[in-house]
Image 1 (cartoon, rainbow, N blue to C red):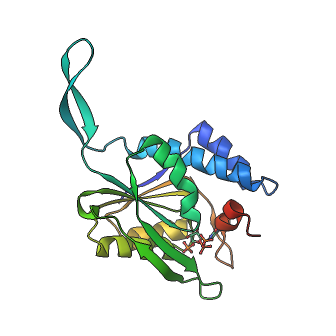
Image 2 (image 1 turned 90 degrees about the horizontal axis):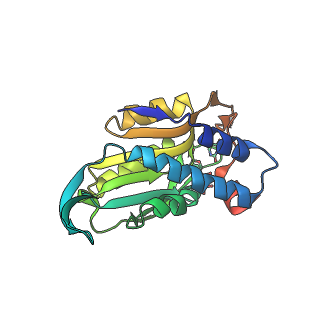
Length: 207
Ligand code: PRP
Ligand code: URA
């Protein structure tokens, strides 16, 4: 397992906008998608490419194509806020969905939906969710994706905390974790500090 925290100036600037309490839902969504597309550029750095013969207007040559199909798995709801940004970079990515919410009292994930794509076993899977707090939701989502037969899985989030990274890397040591920021800790209500509040509510304007 590897954990990567992004410290790029563009990401730091956009994430700071998202953290501010006064940021509108529209600006929150735009910055989230922009950060997701910047992150995926780096996540793909070591992805295998296959050579293909092509013709340019000038000559025959060899080009390269990403070897495996790509499947995004947003954890509903908040993970949906990262899909457009990633698909703008990988337009052929297909989308499988896992619906989970965190029980307000127990903080355990409760599943309410799951829909896979047909080619999951051969695909490069990106499970996405803005927040990695206790890690319960990410662990459950990856359990589901592995039950579908997924072999190569990466987890991309915006804000993580040490508790979530520890829990996820123990439960799924084969899954690389990418976060725009590793924040300080969880508070007594299992919210990330300093964090950005409830990502789903801020994306969808439900509070
Ligand atoms: C949030 C977030 C993660 C989860 C993280 O979702 O988007 O899925 O909490 O917390 P955990 O690491 O402690 O499991 P939430 O349950 O609020 O649902 P929502 O996306 O529908 O708002
Ligand atoms: N879910 C969120 O949306 N934010 C947190 O800080 C923790 C869980």
